[in-house]
Image (cartoon, rainbow, N blue to C red; front, side, top):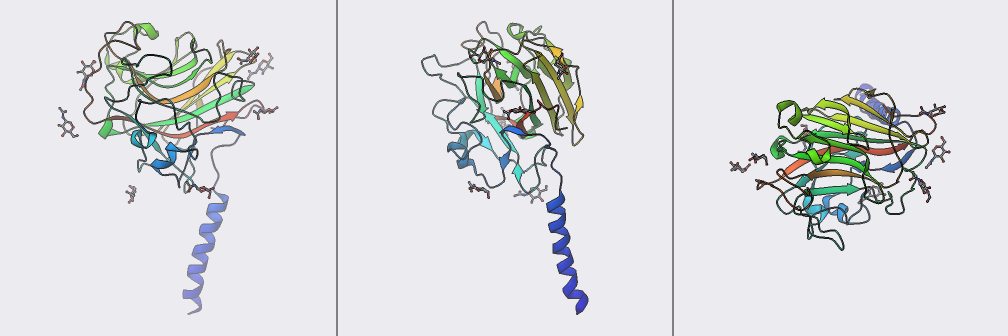
Length: 300
Ligand SMILES: *[C@@H]1O[C@H](CO)[C@@H](O)[C@H](O)[C@H]1NC(C)=O
Ligand SMILES: *[C@@H]1O[C@H](CO)[C@@H](O)[C@H](O)[C@H]1NC(C)=O
Ligand SMILES: *[C@@H]1O[C@H](CO)[C@@H](O)[C@H](O)[C@H]1NC(C)=O
Ligand SMILES: *[C@@H]1O[C@H](CO)[C@@H](O)[C@H](O)[C@H]1NC(C)=O
Ligand SMILES: *[C@@H]1O[C@H](CO)[C@@H](O)[C@H](O)[C@H]1NC(C)=O
Ligand SMILES: *[C@@H]1O[C@H](CO)[C@@H](O)[C@H](O)[C@H]1NC(C)=O
Ligand SMILES: *[C@@H]1O[C@H](CO)[C@@H](O)[C@H](O)[C@H]1NC(C)=O
């Protein structure tokens, strides 16, 4: 009798201790947190509860609750069990963005999340100065596969005046206009590429169909350098490049999601070929956060 009473108590106590002592892999001061709290619903993304802007950047007449999914996957190593969950961004034939004062962007199929406190056009927010590391993990959804004959611009930090990006993370066949050679080879299709501000590829790795891939880009605004860190699965991030010279001026915002570019295009934004999407295409994200690395700290 004594034993049967004690065992459940022990069970509870050790679970509580484990929870309390579980170490998060996020080690440095967070500037913007894009990790999704477990209690958020799809409807939360249409409101101020969202970690992201409820308004931008998406197909006109679509709400984020119609674009996003909450897939039941394993977690990125930078999401905490019992605290966070994964998020999937999807596109379909209706993912046409109409910027205020501009024309409908019929060249793209796009849905891009902006961290709600990441300011533009003012720029110069706290992720635009010092040394900052931008983190995201990405995973493929076999039910919503990409067509990698196209260029997919999935994560980028765009200058406040929209004249370019400090860095760009792309998959698939990169258009000539965006610094690629435009050749649809298996190697080009099936790789992620990190481009610097001049669209030069500084890191490349195969796209995995069944595992998390974890990326981090560190921008040192004072020294004007860019450094890539990478790991697959649950492995800690490793340095994938040295700090490379990069012109980091211009402030701006991080954007993260899917921007599927057309093929056979001149302007990229307003013309070219996009096939009918059967259902939707998606990218699963996790572990999205921006951290202050001014003290030399990087979460790995
Ligand atoms: C989620 O939980 C947090 C912390 O307990 C709470 O502050 C927040 O209001 C909750 N959000 C929703 C949408 O329920
Ligand atoms: C989520 O996946 C886990 C493991 O595959 C499974 O045990 C669980 O039932 C799933 N939950 C839902 C809500 O589908
Ligand atoms: C993938 O894209 C290419 C280039 O636009 C197109 O020719 C092809 O039909 C597409 N494939 C599918 C399965 O939609
Ligand atoms: C930036 O440059 C300064 C001075 O040259 C150097 O001390 C510092 O280590 C550099 N920072 C990084 C992150 O390399
Ligand atoms: C921040 O703004 C100041 C002036 O407004 C400008 O000189 C500086 O270059 C900006 N910093 C960045 C990183 O763009
Ligand atoms: C479209 O998707 C559905 C459901 O996934 C599938 O059954 C069907 O074969 C697909 N059609 C084409 C033309 O690929
Ligand atoms: C980043 O950390 C440095 C010191 O390591 C601190 O001076 C600076 O204010 C921090 N920046 C932000 C935005 O918190």
